[in-house]
Structures are given as structure tokens and as C-alpha cells.
Image (cartoon, rainbow, N blue to C red; front, side):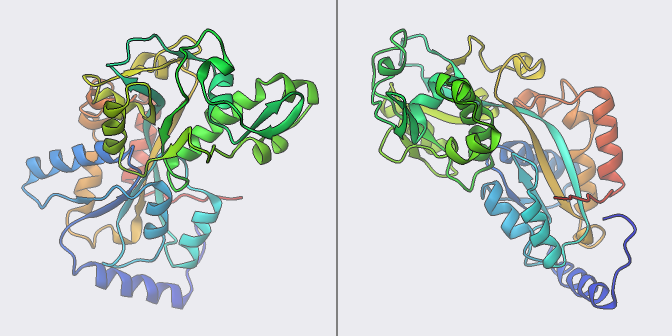
Length: 345
């Protein structure tokens, strides 16, 4: 939305929302479990630097956060939402319908989607994207037909893999991590199948037929709390977990990464794109709350600071892969100036 004129009713809604928002003292943030530790780190730094109340940061998942964020303006609604994927057109439309018409988008850096296993597992793991698809997809090729997935052990897919049962804990459909994993790992793995290549199936077919995860046991939806996945991996050394690199990075004492196409997730491999499943991370600011919610502008300045976002900054120390210098400067200018996004279908 650029210079579109506001109607009288829209102006009244913004004014009412701003008045209500002023009754709340704490900044409120929702959204992605992957972005959560970065936002929490900024919140702690901000509170230490300023003495202001620490923002309330909730891990609701990307989809859940968007729904709450786009619910309206005023004190009942959050000021910022984190996202492990870009806002969808349908979410943008929901925001518009509810008067959230002025939003700034911040791409804060990059993250690798990691598959990890307990350090108690002594085997070496290296999966291809095709292996991942065949292990975790609801439907796969079976004797030349597209059918329900029959595989129960990794060696049934690839005899070079460890001979253990397939079991992976991953995020639910409301999670941006799930959306990104389906797009970057499952669709890409499906594209590698001879069945798909020889059949000449296009991207629409892949999206329609290769997006569903298994529901017969080998893939388990573990909710938005990544700590619960770690507990389950501790309990079963052969089980795998799917989450963002930042969470793996913070739990390397208990977990080890599974290589994909011979490459481990790491800051360097995510940055140079040699690690095959990486994604951008975002947060979104409700601009109607700027100048109304106490300390919101100052918090955004801390989030956009070089100390937080540059290479070697305190978010990079927690696993965020930093933007390049030019990208970072443009991001800081756009967000600090409150540049509104204009998402079109």
C-alpha cells in the first residue's frame, strides 16, 4: 500500500485502535518458534539497555501468529509477528479486511531447515532430498504406481542408510517451518524421483501430489515447542527431529546434524547456499502502533541495529545467518522509515 487515500471510516478505525493501544505498557510479539529465540534475545538486550519493560514474546507458530496479528489494531492485538516464511496473500488480505492496512516487512536473515538426531546415535547420517521424500511423504511410487507409502525402515529406501525404523518428529501445518520444509525438501525431493522425471509432471502436479506428510506413524507432528522434540530424541536415539538451524545450534551438546547431499547445516553452508534447504526469516510490524505503544519505536531500532543484525552481531552468535552489507542497509532504512509493504497475488 503506497499512497492510497484512507476513507473516513478507516481513519476512525485507526484512531480508535491507537487510543486503545495506548492503554498497554508492554510491547507484544507473537509468531514463529524459529524467530522466537532471536526476538527474545533482542527483547532482553532492549530491556537491559533501556530499563523499559521487556516485551512479551509468544511462540505461536507462523500461521497462528499471522492470524492473531491480522485480527485488528489496538491493545488486544500484537504489535509484531515473527515468521519463518513470507506473509501469504491470504494473510495480507485478512489484515486488510481487519484494518491492519499499514505493515512493514523485515527480512532479518537466513536459517537452515535442519534434520537432527541424538548424539547417542553413533551412526553417520547423510540423506538425499529423494531419501527424505521417500521416507516422510504420504504417497510415493510403488511398482510404477503412485501409492500410499509402504516404507518402514531407511534401508528399504536406500541400502546404504542405517537399518533402523523411520521416525521423524516435525512441525504441524500451522508452522512456517512446515511450509518451508514441504517446499524446500519435499517438493525438491519429489522432483528427483524417476517416476516424476519420466512422467513429465510439472510443478502444479508436484504441489498437488507431493505436499502431504505421512500420517501412519513414521512422521509425527510434535507441535510448536521444539524443546519437546529434543526430549523425544533423547528418549529414542534413532528418531530424527526437524527444526530451524538456530535451535540445533543451541542444542549441539545433545544433538548432531544429519547431512543432506553430503553437506551439514552451518552458518557458512547456509550463507553460500551449498546447504540445500535454507530459508529467509521475517518479522512484520503493525505501523499503526508506532508512536502509540510505549517503547515500540525504540525496540524496533534495537532489532534493526548493527549490534543485532550484522555479521558477528549478537543474533549471528545465536545462529542467524546475517544479510550482506547492502541488504542490511536497505532493510534498516525500510523498517526504520516504516515503509509499508504492498503484497499482491
